[in-house]
Structure formats: structure tokens, C-alpha cells
Length: 222
Image 1 (cartoon, rainbow, N blue to C red):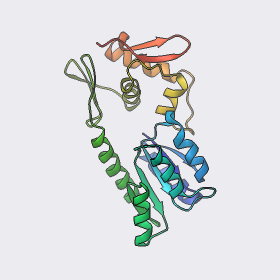
Image 2 (cartoon, helix red, strand yellow; image 1 turned 45 degrees about the horizontal axis):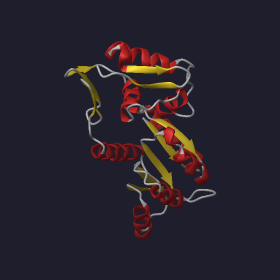
Image 3 (cartoon, rainbow, N blue to C red; image 1 turned 90 degrees about the vertical axis):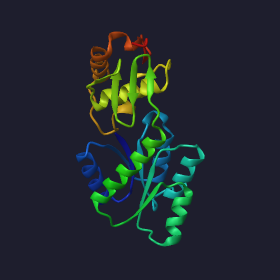
Image 4 (cartoon, rainbow, N blue to C red; image 1 turned 120 degrees about the vertical axis):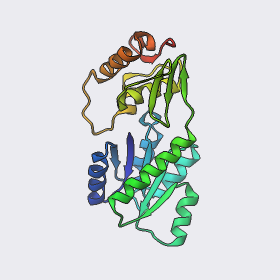
């Protein structure tokens, strides 16, 4: 799962990247507000959650948050900041933060807040994606074919979810890579083909169409 960390303190940033990485999150880290706004404007990035500091160079976290919500983005935002007055908390939540955590904080609490926000977000977007006899359940994080569960990896699940969310749309290699991997991760040139091959083996060769020279889209219903 891909997270965006917006934090200019190197020690805090390093700690969060390492600690969240240990739990399987892919954390992209930017250090100023302008870079954060650019990252969040990239629809292909598909972040599951944003950890946002308030006091940032070039553009404040509150400004980043207001621009994000002005674009009607529903991505969960956990504001992490040293500003601890009641007025600060109210301002942050009113600007669109889903939760507010004051520094210094324990890594265990950050992880718990992230899990809580992701559960709430999944509950709002809990509709199953149905494609013929194929069902993808975002809440249970499972795939069923003709009523039977299919063993599937997190990356295979993520790829299927991207394709099923926009039936008929063709997704390029770059778009799929950005949806499945963080910026700092080394990606083999054929990794998307490998994931698609395993999905086809499990669900049927026709489940994903290759549009030559362009990319891939969801194929015929099984």
C-alpha cells in the first residue's frame, strides 16, 4: 500500500519511512509543500493515505491540504505537527484533515492511526467490484471466482483493483507501476508482465487484454 509522507525533518522522516516499511507500506517522502502538491496532483500515484506536516518550506501543510480538498480528493490525511493548541487542532480538522497527531509521537500510535483511517476509508469505498463471475471485495481484501476464493498476492490484488475500477480504460505500464510501487523502489522492467501472467494463470487468460503498444485493460468477464 502506497503512502505519501510530507515531512521536512530528516530524523522524523527516516524513522517513519523505516518503521512503516517494516509493516509493508511503500512510503514516498517529499520535504516541502510545493513538492507535496505536485505529488498529490498526479492521479496515477494513487496514494492510500497522506501523512502531512504543518510547518513545511515553500508551502504550509494547511495550504497543501486546502488545495487537495478543493480538488475534491477523498484521500485520508493524517496531520502530524508540533502545533498543539486547541485552535490549531480545530483549524487542521476544518481544513480537511481526517486525524491530527501532535509531535513527539510514538511510532506504534502512528501505525494505529493509519490503520484506523484506512479502515474508515475502506468502509466508505466498500462496494464490491463485479466482473461476470469475478468479484473483488475491497473490505475483505479477497477475490472470488464463481463463488470460490482465489489465493492472490497484494500486488496482484492491487493491479486487478486498478483495472476493474475503470472497465474499458487502457492503463499504460507507467500508470500501473506508479499505482503498485513507490518512487524509491527498484522495479524490474518486466514486473508488470510477470504480475499479469500470474493473474491470467489464476483467473483465465482472457481476464486482461493487452492493447499492443499502449497498455492493458480488463478483458472479457470469466
